[in-house]
Length: 301
Image (cartoon, rainbow, N blue to C red; front, top):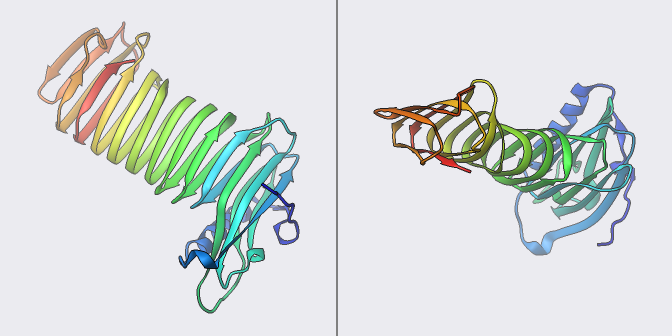
């Protein structure tokens, strides 16, 4: 891919306050939300690349394209993007905003074509952010797109609205806030958060914090829990796979479904109607699972 360094309107700017930084990101997302889809023949694309040095952390809004966050051996944060424009929008009016405030870099798409007559639109077809060692990843926002985060560290807030996110190796906690999406987490320090409609899958054992889902499925590999961890689901099936070394107390209830516990997962089990209580090992912090309409399954890792 032939990356070109397009500065000008895309140049990095320093923002004096965090409030201004957040306002810029909000404007960028609002501008992109009104894009109208037209024929492929009217779609133009170009590739851009930028390096941003002397930052301590980074967050990004990937929009509706392919978003990748990965590590690399450089000393600056490298941003590679494919911009697109349709209709009356010029490619130069679609920019990659790179705002720096107090050592934090915020990356987002921005469209500056003003009032147009006829069909217009544009954004990022793809966005790749390469992060050097020592720079924390603190936020990834996806709106009807796909994200991959792998090989980086930080304290990640993942916001997803109708998209997919795959978190590979991430050194640090991951908090999920989603409307409609599918999230998969592999090797992470901990997972917590909420999803309105979607799925959350944790493939490798980790510490689980409070998790809430309205309509969907949870599949969690667990080797630790926060003190008093709660899992809440309205219309969802919940599967929790427990590490054999974990000591905890369990309180699980479903109003319209079944609680099932595989052999050997708990040392003691008591069932009363749709509620099951039990203990693993000598007991410890309580894992409290409540489901309105759905099944609860506890399995061994």
